[in-house]
Length: 251
Image (tube, rainbow, N blue to C red):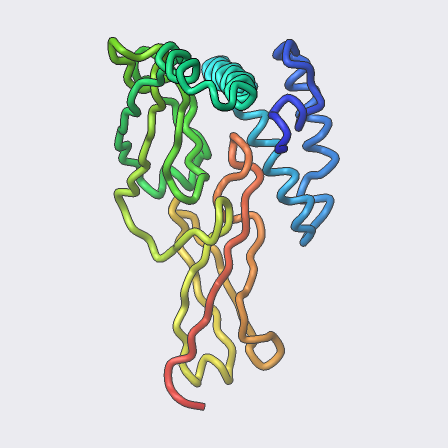
């Protein structure tokens, strides 16, 4: 069974906002990527801690998360009862009619420029009178917000709000995962023999100077740390930019 966000941060469900922040800072510091470079396990742990904090630190997301957890516990207890009822088909049918029903999901498209995604990890949205932060780092660009969907007359509680993030401008970058980027660069034989120096213009209009000596460095992905997508809220911690070289011509 997967851990809840409260269990990930070693918190009681009734923890205050200050307790949530204090526990997050302590745990994030213990497994921060700067302390454990190239440690995938610690990197995933850091991302999980951030995901838990992002939900529990936002009052709207925390309310939606707690409501969803309570409904899931109710459903689990109800399933145990129905399993014990076994062959009592009539009882099952009667009880099923009175079960809470979730409303249909609502789908919204949100257009976001890649340059905006690169500058900060979150944007604030107001939908159906509810304000919440939208995490732009999620690679699949689809976000599910429990409890903000449609609530028809027959429904006991609302469905989910599904937000599709649509990137409206295109750069020569693609996302490897939530935080890392790949930049493709073609080189010829002269570049390979003599080395190469070039500038990459980033989505925020900053420039990065890249130098590569292929005779002394492997012809593989070149890693440029801390210039990828933002990891934390203010963008001070970032993922990695990988440069992928393709040799044009024959050796």
